[in-house]
Length: 363
Ligand code: SF4
Image (cartoon, rainbow, N blue to C red; front, side, top):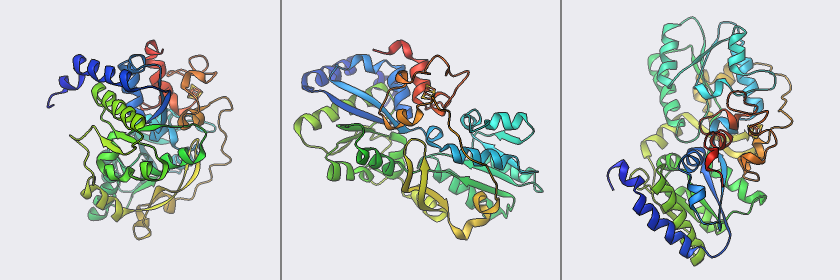
């Protein structure tokens, strides 16, 4: 298949769906790790097309959502450092921290600027040589290479006022943590397409090998996802878990060596705090000590005070897959995209936002 229409072909989808219907003999719970998949599933009404034996749960694959409240508070405190310019992707602006969001900090006088890429942030640093410019690095293996490249670029240019607050996270350890916790029994996982483009399908081999759980890497078109579900059902029914790849137009077994290399030059693997999952060893990326002048955590000491989460928000449960967004009592009532209480309702990849936006497709 070469063209986008082919990945939305209703006839092919019907055939795959009837294969799923035929083969699925028992109730199975599948987690779509990635928030992009949750949005595609809801947008195309895929939940309603699957047989009742297939239960889809959202996972922790929304980088904005899994950013811990304490880290968000730290970023907000950083934005108040006199003279400092904090640059960030748009979604982070509206996430409520303990007392305010970055957007509210900006309204209160902090210089917080929304950027579309790290290149914008470097440009701001060049234009403001006398002011520190910090990029808020939030994302998974997909965005970490571009942030690493920006740090190397700053080093090449001698851009001494640029630094990054690295809150980057790694996806396989989060998957492992969910399976280890055993709170939600998972029979299979729809693997994140963009992340796996970087890390390679082989990075997921531990799931069938150690947990007996199959993973099917998927792209973001409806047929990609339906095919991944069909693969998972086949593997579960046959009792032969492995890793399949229905996103071969982007994902290889080894991943992207150039991206992995640039990440390894700039970052070292460290423990990271995840909303909903807590502190996970070897699940984050810290800037290497030899590049500490580009590490905002090293350059600026800020006191963000005690962190406080909204009592009623159940984002943590949504991110672990123990509940679906509509099971949160605040969903669609006190919490909506215009007045979000938690990050899962703010982010373009948040599960609550997807369920709210495409709620007409709920079963
Ligand atoms: Fe949090 Fe709102 Fe989602 Fe509830 S609906 S879990 S309050 S983001």
